[in-house]
Image 1 (cartoon, helix red, strand yellow):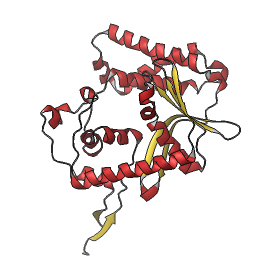
Image 2 (cartoon, helix red, strand yellow):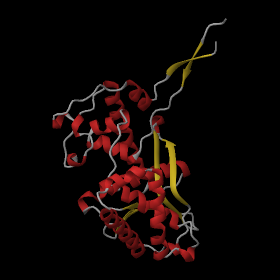
Image 3 (cartoon, rainbow, N blue to C red):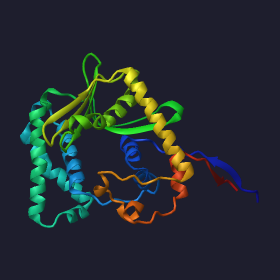
Image 4 (tube, rainbow, N blue to C red):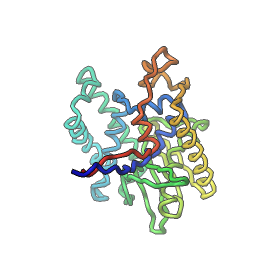
Amino acid sequence: MTGARVTVEDVRRAAMSPSRVRDFQQCPLKFRYRTVDRLPEPPSTAALRGTLVHAVLERLFDLPAAGRTEASALALLDPQWATLLAREPELLRLFTTEDDVAAWLAQCRALISTYFRMENPRRLEPDARELLVEVEIADGILLRGYIDRVDRAATGAVRLVDYKTGRSPSERFSAEALFQMRFYALMVWRLEGTPPSRLQLVYLGDGRTLTLDPHPEDLVSFENDLTGWWDRIEAAARSGEFPARRSALCPWCSFQSLCPAFGGQVPPVPEEGISALLGVRRPATVGG
């Protein structure tokens, strides 16, 4: 009988997504609970509405261009809702009565109708939809994100489009809203060598569009900012200190019962979650 052979298992660090970076910026403790502890959160009708409307708009482009009408899109809603329920029947618990479901579906239909007042999908041929993009930037930092739609012109110019089912932000918060799109633009630039020509947020809640035309120097600055935020995340992970930060967003947080700002008790930091975040190499025994 021979002795066991010990090797090293290479575990990649967790990828940074725009939502997780925003979590850390807003409240490091919320970031920890979502990314390190990976605590489950109850679904909401608002999030579910976004999921359903996104699914309809994605499937819309499966149709021939001439068939991408408002009526066709609305006809996709009920089948997509049935698909969601077949996968997660417990979603119905978010509603008290059948009338609540009907009212909620009517809201979804209104958002889809608004889309047709903002764009003409019969004139669009997306290069990609729901595109998963992953890329390493400086210091081996891994970025990952899903882009709702990528449009590519005959000239090669690229437009990144993201649908939002809420209302557009005020001018004061527009830069914050575009954080996600800058994140996507940086990934595409690092992958393709050319930055997207336009970033576009389509707000179906009020029919407004927010755009930005990024430049390489802006994306370099943004990349430096992300590197700085990763350094802060890494420092918090190594120290185990993820402080709570109170803000106007606290009333919507799922973790108030575990937040000291609301009298909650913070549980110990899970070591496995920290290892996964940092990409720590762990010993693994193989052979015999």
